[in-house]
Image (cartoon, rainbow, N blue to C red; front, side, top):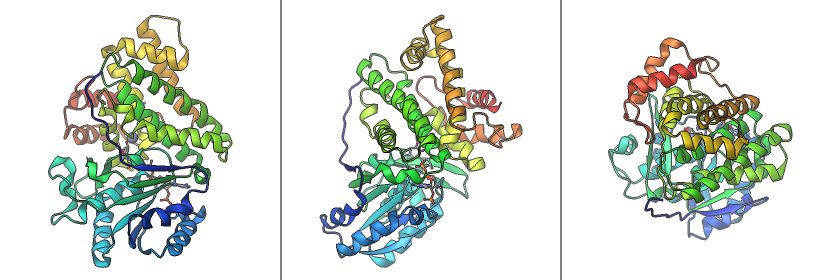
Length: 387
Ligand code: NZQ
Ligand code: ZN
């Protein structure tokens, strides 16, 4: 195990009928005026918006709204939110939605006090020195953004989907009521599960050895997601399975799962470049890219991939290498069974676009820790992912 510091100040409020407590939580910090930030309208259909508004009114909290945050959120919307917050002297942000809304809230919260352009925080060019408090109401379990300090935003003009982070950006309070996720379309539930699994894989296969307890934790999260996601596709209102998937997704990327080891994150960088090109959902992109990455690097961690095959899919027949390769194939089959695309071709990417994606991802090269990847490696992974 590596040395580590673990810090996570987010208060998690988890469970049924918890959203109506948002006003009290905000009020307990002495905050009287907030920005409400949300997406394209799902919160009107499932009643979350009304619950939040009535809780804010009950607690005498004023609000202004910025709506229309898109999946794969863009920096222009973040700039719009910063302007509205400055004009209205808001004291905090309530993000209602998934990773796209929460990440936009994080960027807006950092940009609020900053004199330059908010994009300066991306690519590690500027450090966040001060930020507005963020409260979140999570409506789709996937990214872990509700309990971590990072965000990912697309600069649509520069065609870059990059991440940023700061310890100042942990949400103060996150409310997670799994029952409201029953309004998700099946493919969004699947995307969330795949993203959460991918976060575990990035850490599990990052190349740090002697992390037995953390590996057991990872395998537990993986098995739980594989067990409960198919149940939700048949029975979206199953609260027990919603809760299991939701807490798995949070634990996958709230820091605890990264303790004592490093994460690889090459697949995430490559997927972000796929999304820049064709605006595919992050989880769907990972269903394509991550197994291709696994095939490419499997011989760098033969024991670990074999352990994965044995502990997650109960594969015992064959050499370690064969068990690992079978496990990767099983994972692809699982993604297919969830309705996710498993090739770039299926998702609409053309063969001649591989070069654009590889160049875009290679801006941050070398990628990864298990095996440092350069443009030629990224190209080969994309070729494996193509069909
Ligand atoms: O916009 P609305 O109408 O709300 O619809 C959303 C959106 O279309 C819909 N949705 C959310 N909750 C719903 C619902 N529909 C019905 N019922 C509900 N209860 O779901 C769609 C996807 O939402 P989005 O926020 O984009 O999903 P997700 O949470 O997967 O976030 C993805 C973004 O987060 C980034 C990804 O790259 C991507 O941009 N990531 C953020 C990370 C982080 N901050 O730590 C790490 C991740 O690896 C990831 O990169
Ligand atoms: Zn992810």
